[in-house]
Image (cartoon, rainbow, N blue to C red; front, side, top):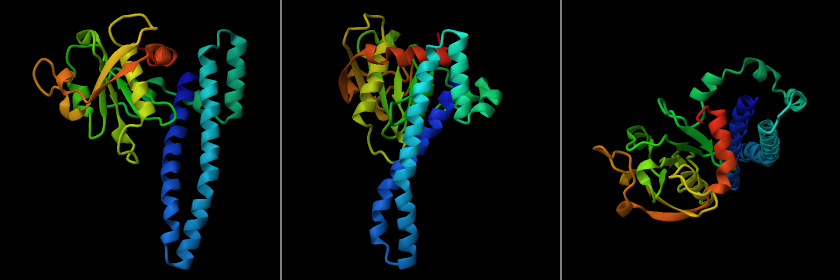
Length: 250
């Protein structure tokens, strides 16, 4: 159930990003000189806000179902969720869902990546959380353009590196603040063990400034960081634990 809901939610999040881009472009309709072309463009533009509202509403409904699925502790609760998902047109997906294929096709997951992929709230930008290791060639190779790497400052050798893949949303020229904070919180959560309530200093940088060779490939260097964020791991604890459970990384 969770796999189907997560997959469908990602579809709606991607659709929302596309429609938001279309909404921005629709403002250029006034610049079209041809009367007939202008009328067609205006008609398409007028439909975008309605479609965006529908997609947003469906995404919110799916988020609610997904949250409830993680707390479904008995058969009655599961049956209720199944019935609601059926009413939402997800019966066929429930019967044919392939968990292994879904993991391979997860939006933003590079080939060979065995860590977690967690979409940022609202924007749906893929965030990669690598397994803890001293070096990480794959994550370094995946980073592009305006992507950002995150890692807890303390205990770097035993902390997971986190990659915010902003480059996958071509409408963005830089990483949104809320996505940066969310990725930093994940880096804090998957950093060196500490109390969940403690603020954690997390540094970030872009793909150009991570180590590119040697035994430390993929590591963030304090001297080359773009900045630091005081992160709160408790803010993402539920999301992180749910991702670990859903993606089999416990």
